[in-house]
Structure formats: C-alpha cells, structure tokens
Length: 478
Image 1: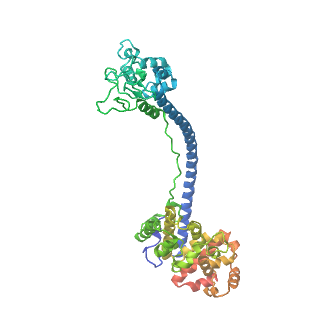
Image 2: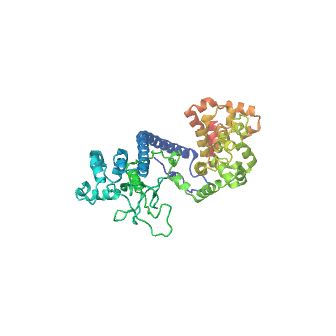
Image 3: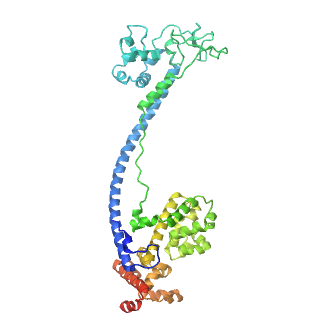
C-alpha cells in the first residue's frame, strides 16, 4: 500500500519546515514497511511466474529440438526431390521412388492417397489425360489436373514445334539443334521445365538468334515450386522462449508513493534526466565526460555527492581507481558513496563504455530521482534524510573511525549524542576515543532498537533547532 505524503506537509517546493522531522521519519518508515510487504508479495508472484515460465520453456526447448530435426529432414527431402527431377532419365525412376513421390504428394495435397494407396497415385500420374479409360479420367477433376501438370503419361518421341527431335547432348543438356542426341523421355519434359504446347510438342522461340540449345523455351521450375510447397507444409516453426521482464518498476523504491510519482514528473527533474540520457551516449571518451560539467554534476548528484562537483580532478582520480588495489584512492575514502560510484561506472576497467550504456543511464536516472526526492523531503523536515541514510549505512560500519569518515553517520552520531562540532579539530585518535565513550559500533549496528533510539535523539534535536527549544532537550537527553 502506498501513502500519499502530500498530506504530511504543505508548501511543496519551499525550504521551510512544515512538520517535525520525527513525524516525517515515522511516516516514511510506515510507507517503507507497506512497500516492502507489497514487494514481498510481488516477489512471491514473480517466483511463481518464473517456475511456470521455466516449465513452459523446457517444453518449448523440447518441441524446438524436435522441430529442428524435422526441418532438417524436410530440407533433405527438398534437395533430394529437386536433384532427382533434374537427373532422372526415365519417368519410372521417379514414380517408383517413394521419397520423391512423398514430396510430390504432399506438395499437391495427395498425402492421404500416398499413405493409404500409393499405387493409385502412381496410376494417376502415369495416366494419359486423353484416354477416357485412364485412372485420372475416371477420377476427379483434380486427378486430371495432376496428371496434366506433370505429364508423366506422355509417350513417344519428344519433338519441338518445328519437328526437331528434343534430346540430351553429350553434356547432358537438352537441345533441339539437330545434333546427335540421346532421346529425352517425353514424360520428363515438364519436370525439366520445358514449355509444351497443346500438341504435346516443346515450344520454341521466334528469336532470330538461336541459343546454344536451339530455340527451346524453358519455364519456371516445376520441381522448385513443389519443393517450396512441401517445405511450407511440413516445416515446423521455431518457438521463442518466454523471457523474464527486464523492466524495473519504481515500486522497488522503498518510498514509492503518489507523491514520489508526481515529483518524478517535475520539469526540472525530467529536464536533467533527459539531458543526461541524450548526451552521455554521445561522448567519445572519458575526457569528454569530465569536460562536460553538467554530465559530471548529474552523476555526482545521483550518488548524493553534488557538492564534490567543484573538485573534478579529485573525482576523476577516484573514478579511475583500481578497486582491486586496497590503497587506491576510492578504497581509502571512508565514505562508501565514492567506492559505490567507482564500482558502478567501471571507468578503470571499461573506460567510457559502461558510461554510455543505456542501462547505466536508466539506473543513474533512478538514483538521481530518489536522491532529489529525499532532499526535497528534507526541506520539509530537516534531518529526515540523514536519518534515512543512517539506517541504510550503519549496517556496513565495522570500526568507529568509519563514523567519522562518513559525513552522514558523523552528523547523526554527533548531534544525537550532543558532541560539539569542534571535535573535528582534534586528532583522529582523539575523535575516535571521544566517540567510543558514547557509542559501541558493534552493539549499535546489530540492534534495531538502539538504531531507532539514536535516530529519535537526532531528529528530536534537529526539530528543536528550528523551534528554538534545544536547551530543554539538552537537559532531557544530556
């Protein structure tokens, strides 16, 4: 369940506090809990979908393996069919070849007859369409059309329209040039692509320049057309496996709410994201990135480090650090934001490549929206953002010195424990000693109640700062 935070404050966009930081923090906690419950429910649903998806994909993979095996066989049949049509010397070779006959039958819609009575199919093909007693003439109109289509029942000597014998020369080429040729079975004329006139003779051209094969006219490939029909009928499509959704909903944000969605649509927010998305993809090198102050500021803002934009040289050295080197600049900073930014952008390993990825721009855009939104909440209730960040970061702290190196952790710890800011002027060892008198890091990070107490003290003091009641609180807590 999402809570509309607009009911918590008024004067959106102003810098004046309109409610106590503690009240705002509690409301945000409740919102985060509700969103976590919804996210947990969504995650369970997604896991169930994933199981179903994988089950379906396993079936698809099995089906596709069978389809590929089937398609390979279909392709082999097609090649075989066309080769036999081009090389057979008698009609008998073809009609008695079951593999050839299968392709012909399926291409012409005679698969049932092929399976149940292949001899009748042969008889139809070998019928003389002019003989009233032939099997084709005794059958259907479709049988007559099939018999005519192939003309396997044609007998005698094949002549052309001029009376010349049509046959095969020494190279196996069909000619009618008057040379010595081996007779061509007339039943093979059509399947060898010769055009035949109504008198059963091979058609010739009127062109004054004869071709090498005389004046024979060849048409489109009968065998090729039937091979395509067979392939289309018996080939099986390859199914695509279902892929998981790659979209990341804003509901993964712990403070997602109608108010956050409205904030995302603000012109100033969208303008910065649009500028970054459009321009980061155009950079040619890391130098281009650092030379564009607006791009650099956007990235720093996404990690809540916008104040560091005035030190581009320092930021470049950090981002180009080798994270595998414990002494690298990124690793030496106690503030985890620098290391996280260096890791995410991967400039040491990938130069400008990762920066320019669309996925990187999307992720940085999300970070930017959320940081800016939390800053906006902090304007309404000063201190609430530090409290939020404290709960996020304290779990990663192992030593007291880390509290000093992280500006947010330092702010919460020192304010909550009424430690003067002048502590920063002392040596690091002295600062650590002073903090350890007030805070046990190990006990704090592992005890949710202690964390809540620390945040309550911090927010109470922050609220008092704006109301002028801090002296009372010093007596209460100090």
